Figure 1 (spheres, rainbow, N blue to C red):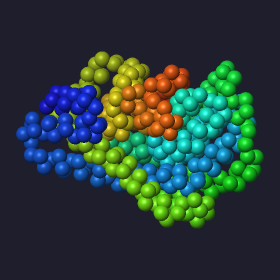
Figure 2 (figure 1 turned 45 degrees about the horizontal axis):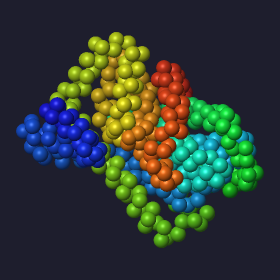
Figure 3 (figure 1 turned 60 degrees about the horizontal axis):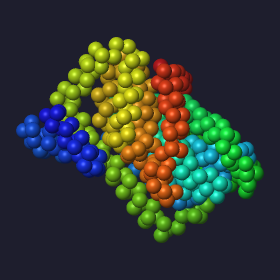
Length: 425
């Protein structure tokens, strides 16, 4: 059964069938091979999405779209530019810093790419940066949307591996700040070397004025994250609060969202949410079948025999996840692989929260690596260029994130220190 399922899935991928349909078809074939009743498919697909924490996904997607339309993202860009925009290479640094702030609410890298890229990619081009560089920078910076909490992939890992989502969120700050800081340092050095960005400070608002304009926007992550860690509401409830706050600010304070805009915002959010939920449902059925077939235990035993130490295990897992992330969507990868790999990681004494951060950061790299990097397609859409044109500019950014991944993997205190401080056992 397992061989038939995996072969079917790989064949569908090769024929460019969508990820969700490929997983679903292979799972249906597995049911037919075992002779089990087809009713199992409906039951398990429903069980996969019938989980309260998953309600946060459509809410965070809607909040991100409201922020984009309501002028919140534009004000965050102006605020970030007032901080770092005055130095050479300040505009690319603004892109990274804005994505870090925006990530503290949106939870989605694709939403971050569109919301921030629509503003900063044209600005970077206007200041003389190559369009390919602007697109590669935006795609990479938006990856922070799934690393800095709240994060949709972290929610999926928490549900799949039965790990506290709150602990995953707080553990994400260290890796997120590391990657954001490394990217800012890299673009600053790179722009100095290339001689780009000497006039990046043109049109920059004074810090005080930018702070006042972005005050309501900056309060959003404070309220959301403060509410979660202050015990006021759960991460799922926080997603609903984010929607309400973004709607009120966009409609009644900034007054950039009109009633006619709401239909387009809701439609876009529903489509994005449905795609993710469809992937979750099919991947849940696939995971149920391979678990029932004993695949996780077999893989676990094999890994324990081949990779004798935690260091080798993490190296092997990182290499495998990096390749998998190139071809399979992040959400589907987490739902299928987390129940398999998390127990093995615990056998090696690796904290499940730390392992979750490794998985999320590694698979997030798949969003900026060909051939199926969703951030790349989003950035290419905004910049109006083909994917092949930006590969050369993308390679240095991928190497920077890979270096950060190695630090995150082998320095667990980077992820766990803040978690242990907040969630003292």
